[in-house]
Amino acid sequence: MSWRIFTGTGAPGAAEAWRALPEPPPWRDRSTAVSSFVMTDELRDAVNAALHLRRPLLLTGAPGSGKSTLVNVIADELDLGAPLAWHVTSRSTREEALYQYDALGRLHATQMPSRSARADDVERFVTLGPLGTALADPDRPRAVLIDEIDKSDLDLPGDLLNVLDQGEFDIPPLVRAGAALRRVRGADRGEYAVADGVVRRRHWPVIVLTSNGERTFPAAFLRRCIRFQMPPPSEQHLRDVVSAYLAQAAADAEGDKIAEFARRVVAGESLALDQLLNFVYLVSGEQRPDAAARSHVERIVLEGLTGP
Image 1 (cartoon, one colour):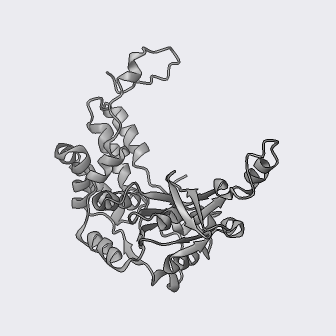
Image 2 (cartoon, one colour):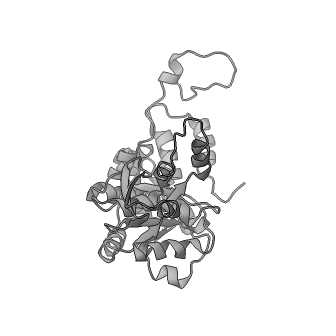
Image 3 (cartoon, rainbow, N blue to C red):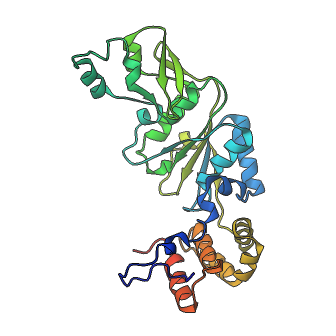
């Protein structure tokens, strides 16, 4: 099968062309990404420091450096279940991490002729957020990814750490409704007991915060985290990553391109490690492009991330 499954001619192609696509890149599969993660000694020690101290681990580094994958590696090895993820934006709030309350949905339900919602079933309209679910889980610590915390507003990081230090938070709709015990849905679709409208920590969650380094944080926030700066990858590290995902033969065949990529990173270009993986995957597969197409692929896939 040709590299050009799509010809661009507009003519209907054979149905078999789509079926002839090779398997997706291995790092697009969570389990493969976890098993192939290349761990440095310093990063391993940072994780252990965070575990011993029950502190969040704040990872700072370029996009594509493996920051988000680490929480899956930790969760799998320590049997913490599927990680809970919260992807932060400039509009994210503390409450979003802890719980959501569908006030309009409850109002609508109480006004239905069947009165399917009573005054005392407010828990049907409360859903715990990722961090709230981790604090409420009575069975084991949970792993939580708080992704791109540097995109939040200025106060959010400190507000979150206050909740972690205290280990509890109120859910006002449940507090107002009274009653000793309510069962609410978690971010993982499980059910969790909440007594008196207050979620109280049973276990210290394992929290990984990621930052692309787009802003600074106050000292009060930084001192309550274990911080780790993902270093620029060395040429050997890049070779190790490529061979972990695509076998040693691919790393050897593209040794010159790996070395060039490492030099560009050291020179300060904004590049992500998965760009290199993408390129090596495309040019080392069975349906690899010819020389002309390879040149096009190299320019497209390995372009710096600061361009238009």
